[in-house]
Image (cartoon, rainbow, N blue to C red; front, side, top):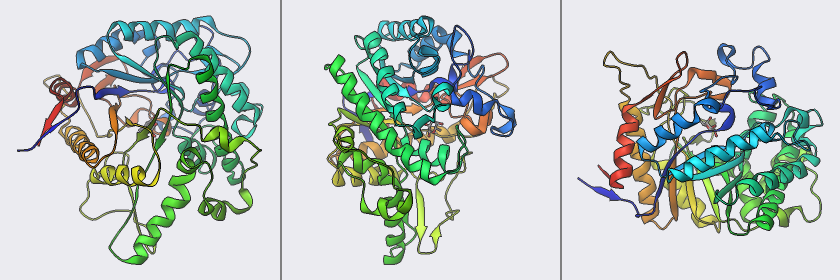
Length: 440
Ligand code: FCB
C-alpha cells in the first residue's frame, strides 16, 4: 500500500457558482442575467430547466455552511452574481444583494472556511448584453467597476479573488457553438469577446490591487490536455496542433504577454481588435492560477477520437483519465512561468440515486476523486506547486445546458424538497481532509 501525504496547509475545499445554486432569480432586487434570459427561452436547456430556484442556496445558505462544516472543508469557492449587486450591470447598487454576500462571507470566516471568490462565472447582467455584452469594449470597464465594488465591501475578509471562470468556455460555448448564454454563433465576435475578457481580467486585477494590495488575485482556466492516440509523429503533431490553437488561447496572453502565432493563423480574418497597452494589462503578475480539470482530448492524424477503447466515461460523456491531469500540470509548469496553482474544479457526474437505506452510494465518484488527488500529488512531487483542491461540486446543481440532469455533487440534492444528503463520496472526502492523506 502507498500512502500519499499532502502538505499540512493544503487547502481542501469544494466549489459552486452563483447561477448554479442560488435561485431567487428575481428576489430582493436582483437584475436579470444572460443565463436567466437564456434558460427562460424554450429549447436552450434540457427539460426546460432553469436556475430560478436551483438549490435555493440564497435562502438555505446557513444550512449549506453547516454542511461544509460537517464535511470539514477548509475552503469554499463560490461566485458572486453581478446582477444581484448591480441589477443593470453598472450604476445603481442593490444593497440587499451586497448584504447577502457579506453575511455569507462573515459566516464562512466564523466557521474557519477560507472564502475563494470568483467575480464572473458566466452570468453577465442582461442590461450589459443589450449594449453588446463582451463584444463591446466598455463591458471590460464595467467589470472593473463591479470588481471595485465587491473588493471594497469584502476585501477585508476575502483573501482570494478570481476575475473569470473559464474564459475559453465563455468564448467557445457562448459564442461559437451557442450552447451557453448568450447563445451566439459568430466566430468574429467570439475572438473579440476572448480579448475583451482578457482586458477585463487585466483591468479587474489592477483595480483590486489598487484598492487592496494585500489580497491574492488570479484567474481560473479549464484545460483539456490534447494527447496523441499513438506514438506516431503524425498523431503527436495533430494533438500539439490542437493544443496550440485552442488551449493556449488564454495561457499565452496571461503568462507570455502575447497571443501565439498558431492562434493568429487559425483565427485569420477574425483576429480581434487589440489596443496599445492591452497586452501589458493582461499579462500582469498573478498570485495564483486556478486550473479546472475534467478530462482530455485524444487525437490521431485523422482528427479527434470519439471514443477510447477500454476507457470509462462519465454521464457528461467525458473520458475518465486521471494521469492526464499530472502530465498536463507538468507540461504547463515547464512551458510557462506560473504562479502557485490551485485545482479550482475537478469532479464527475454519475447517475446517483437515493438507495433504500436512505444513502447515496457513489463508488465511481470516490474512485474518480481518489485517482485525481493521487495524480495531483504525483505532479507536486514532480515539482509543480499545487496549493489546494476544490472539488466540483459541494452539491448537485444546475448544470448549464443540461439542467438538473447531471449530478456532480459530494452532496445529493432532492430538488422537490431541497433536502441535502451527503453522498458516500462526501463522507470519503471528509476522511481525506481529516487525515490529509490518501492510501492506495
Ligand atoms: C465547468 C464549470 C462548472 C461546472 C463544471 C461541470 O466547466 O466551470 O460551472 O459546470 O464544468
